[in-house]
Image 1: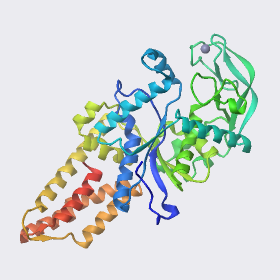
Image 2: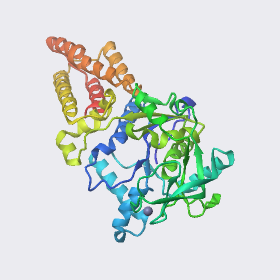
Image 3: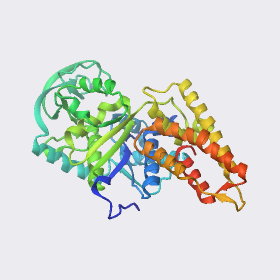
Length: 425
Ligand SMILES: [Zn+2]
C-alpha cells in the first residue's frame, strides 16, 4: 500500500468510498460486469475526489469469502483446490483479471477478505467485545432442526419451507444456546441520515420494517469464523455479521471519520442494519444502486468500456429503479451524442500554432461546479452542466476563437481532456 494521508489533513476529511463486501462468487464462468457496478461507482467517485483535492485516496476492496453459496461451489470442485481458502483466492484472482480488463489497475488496492487470518482475529475480538457490552448475547432459543440432515435452519418462530442443505421439508424444534442480536423497534434509526442515494427511500424503509425483532447470528457451517472463544463450540458467525462489521475494521485501519459504501439496493437489509447496530466511532452512509441488465465482459467491450466503466455507473444514480435493456440503450445513445460533441469541440480548440488563449474565468468556474456536483452525488446536475459547457458555453467560445484565429493553450486542452477522462473515457 502506497497511499498515505497528508499530515495537514483535517479530521473531517478522513473519508473514503468503497463497495460493501460482495460475495466472492465465481465470475469467470458467469456474465459478470453488472456485478462490479458498486466497485466501479466507488472507483469513479474516488477518481473525481482525487482530481478535485489533488491527493491520493486509498482503494479498499472488501470481499465476503465465507458463505453457503461459495461452500457449495467449493464442494462441487473440491479436488482442484488445496483448501477452501485456496478456492476463494483463485476466484479473487479471476476477478482482478476482469477488473484489469475493465481498466481498473489491481496494484495498490487494499484487499480485505473475511477469511483472512488478520480479519478473523479482528472479528473474534470484536465479537467478544460486543458480547461483553450486551450488544449481542447468548440465549437458549427454540430452533428448527432438519429431520433428515440435522442442519439448524432458523429460530423456530420463523416459518421454514425447506432445508438449505438437503431440501427436506421436515423439521423439529429443539432448545439450543445460540448467539442473538436484537433489532431496535425504531427501524428508522438504522438508516436515518445514511442513504445518500436514492433520494426516495420509501421502498428501502419498507424492507427494514420487515425485519424480525431479533436475529440468530450463529450458524452451523463447515467454514466461517468459529465461535469457540465465546463458548459456542461447533458454531460459526453468520457471514452477514462479518460483512456488517468490516466497515468498522476499515474505519479503524484508515482512521476514518466517514465511510461511504456502495451496494445494490435490493440487498439493503443484508448488512446495513447490523452495521448500524454493532459499529461505532465513524459515520457510514450508502449509495444504493439499481441493477443493470446482466452483461458479460465481451458484451461490455462491444458496447464500449468508456460507457460501461466511466459513464454508466454514475448515470445509474439518475434512475430510481432497475435498468431495463431498453433504458440501457437510451443511456448509451445519450452518451454517444455528448461524447461526439465533446470530441468535436476539443479538436477544434486544439492546434500546434502559437496563437493560443487561456480558458476564461467563467469556464474554470463551470468546470469546478461540475466536479463539485459529482463529488456531492448531484449526478444529473453535473451532467446537465457538462452538456451546457460543451454544447453552448464552450461551443460559442470555440467558434469565437476560431473566428479570430486563436486556439486554446495546450495546458487548458489538457485540463479539458483530464476532466473528460473522469466521466467519459
Ligand atoms: Zn437438511
